[in-house]
Amino acid sequence: MKHKSSTDLLQFTPKGIWCPPADVYIDPWRPVKKAMITHGHADHSRYGHRSYLASTTAGPAIKYRLGDINLQTINFGEKINVNGVQFSFHPAGHILGSAQIRVEHKGEVWVASGDYKLEDDGLAEAFEPVKCHTFITESTFGLPVYDWQPQEAVFADINDWWRKNAAEGKVSFITGYSLGKAQRILQGLDSSIGKIYTHGAVENINEVMRLQGIPLPDTIRVTGDISSKDYPTNLVLAPPSALNSAWMKKFKPISIAIASGWMTLRGARRRKAVERGFVLSDHVDWKDLNKAIEATEASRVIVTHGYTSIYTKYLLELGLDAEAAQTEFTGESIDEDDTPSDEKDTTL
Ligand SMILES: [Zn+2]
Ligand SMILES: [Zn+2]
Image (cartoon, rainbow, N blue to C red; front, side, top):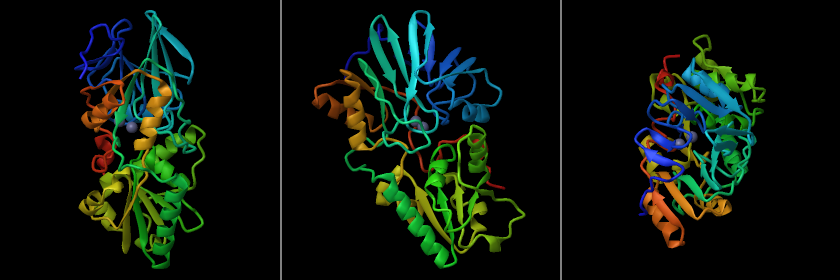
């Protein structure tokens, strides 16, 4: 492991990733004066900062989740200067508005990538490789076993599963975290099979995105007025926190599925006791992780969350200057849902 240098343009501190000459933090996990936010997931976008800067398209979901915050937005590619440090936001392809943050000072360039994926899902702005000297990356799925199928194949499987359940008179109950994954699933569903019902946490984000002009298929919010007879043959889209809740149990007969990168592991599927696990992630898999890092042409790579130590070792073997950093990012979770606690309310 390399020595941390106090002259590094971005430094890992107890409050978060800090840029000393600008006194700006990227996705800080403790309250700070100036925060730049890569995207709205709970582990990157937290309460309590004096000011926030996020991409224009990430703004509405961040505001919806954090409430009355002092939020400025910036368009992708636009440059902003803070005390002689130049910052710009570039698409990360993870969820709508998700950004990599490029930081340039005295000819030195760093990129903090947040969470990202290379496959263009039609909702998130497509990932843009950004050349830099030092690249800060996640490694949530940084092992060769994580090898995603093209999304078309995954959606074909999801729709086949729905069709089969519909023929058997079952409710198709599928979970994906409410900001990003749920809308991605929604966009891949074949609405000709039946109706799509949504949990409130998912529908609230759908509404935020529709107001931004993002076209999403029609959905029906699950409310008390809908009779249980209405659900069979149709699909219910919910956050992972709704799994095995009392809320879920009113849908019967039911077939339960999870859409997550973790569904690669058979043990994860078994532990959650679901019938189907669809491997669909908003993070890069092994091959795209390596491809993305190569495209940056960075000579130094700092690995944040995921398989940090094992992946750092791999990069070192490739001859890169690599190190792991301690952060409070959590990656993709099937239990925790990547969402704030207010969405755990499943009493709807
Ligand atoms: Zn994320
Ligand atoms: Zn993350």
